[in-house]
Structures are given as structure tokens and as C-alpha cells.
Length: 127
Image (cartoon, rainbow, N blue to C red; front, top):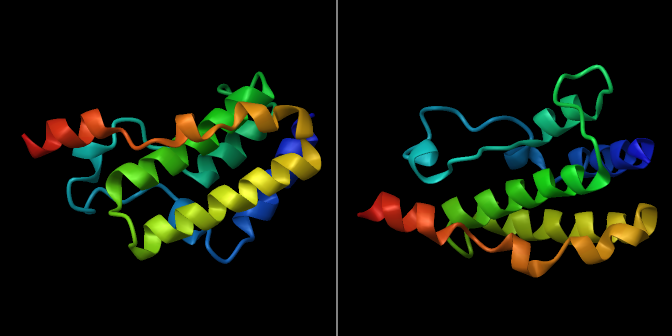
């Protein structure tokens, strides 16, 4: 099953809209870590797929949860209509299609309700 997760992740990482999500956001990005409390990026997901990693994924749902976290962080930090927000929407659609192709039994787990921005973190930052 994790070979299929690895395949999905590889296809996401090779997608032309994936670079904003590949590496950890730099500390110099204005207020990112004040707004985003649980950062996640594709490189960390790649590492966690390895069975030798101490935080190795124990389930496909954990893998999907990390992709949800990347996208929710994107939608929380980046205003609608910006280049990165739009790239997130493309990656969301690509990920959804890859789940349908490789892991169809998990498509129902990847729901729109889980992709909502963390408005509480954003509101706390604005205060």
C-alpha cells in the first residue's frame, strides 16, 4: 500500500505546480509561523514514507492527512486568487485524481470539509 502512496507523492512532486509545497517555508516568510502552527511539506512526506524513518506512516490515512495539512495551510496563509493559493487548488485536484487512480478505497477520506483554512489561527494572528 505504501508503494502506491510513494507513487502518488512522486507524481505530485513532479507536477509543475508543486514547488511552493516541496520544502519547508523559510523563517523569513512574513508571519508564516505565527499563522501556521503545524507546517508540512512534500519533502517531509517523502521522508516519512521511508520505513526506516522514526515517524514512518502507519496508515494511508496518515499520509492523506499530511497532504490535507499542506493544502489547509496553503488556504490559511495565502489569500484566495494568489498564485500559491491557485497552485494549491491544482495540487488538490491532482491529488484527488491520483487517489481515484491508485487508492480508490480512500477517496471518501479526502473530503472538502478537511480542507478548510484554519481561521482560528488566522484570527489569533490578526488580534
